[in-house]
Amino acid sequence: MDTAFVGYALALLVGISLGLIGSGGSILTVPILVYILKIEPFLATAYSLFIVGSTALVGGVQNAINRKVNYKLVLLFGIPSLLAVYVMRAYVLPLVPDTIAIGSLNLSKNVILMVLFALVMFASAMKMIRPKAITQTQSQPQQTQLILQGVLIGVVAGTVGAGGGFLIIPALILFAHVSMKEAVGTSLFIIAIQSLFGFLGDVSNPLLDWNLLLTFSAISIVGIFLGIFLTRYIPDHNLKKGFGYFVLLMALYIFSKEVFF
Image (cartoon, rainbow, N blue to C red; front, side, top):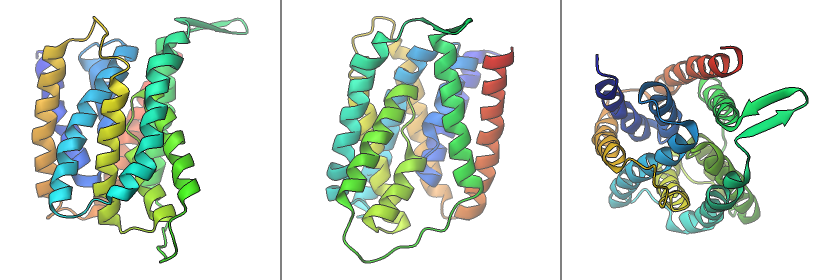
């Protein structure tokens, strides 16, 4: 079977994941691009920023229409995050050499990126499989904590091309005291802004395949509408736990492939 067809078919899962649980888009996108569509890892993280960003933007607009987006939090959390993403993509990562020596061990930049991505996937899986109870209070939002969390998530997103929805949603609930539904809608807007802004650091790359990028993104956008529709029928807790186990298996596969094979 044509690997391009398989890759584009799986693009639906990227959008469905974002539509159902507000996260997980990049966790699927990067492995699909690297292992099925054979995109070089550094370029795949750039593609992921555009694909997830454009898909999340559509989902964010849909949630905005339904009044589930807190625009104050988008600015307070999103601006530090998007600045961190841009700095990582435009200035920090290009300085990292293609080969890094650790003692007698020489590691390629691509291997390090994929191992880091596997670790992010592992953390994401654990949060979905064993979620901690998050209590909401009516106290004032903790603005300093939100800004620091925004910077941290921006660094992660810029490094491995992950939007960080699995980190953003708990942060908004814990430090801004919003409901789960409002956190998901706001998270999609933040993911869209930080990802698309971060992609600006790569937009001049002559290696970008715009035909692949736009096709994958369009299919993913169809997926997010399917995901939003399916939320009416699939219990949130069961969905997150099942997806968490799937992500865990993918993380173990990527880690073992890059480190041992």
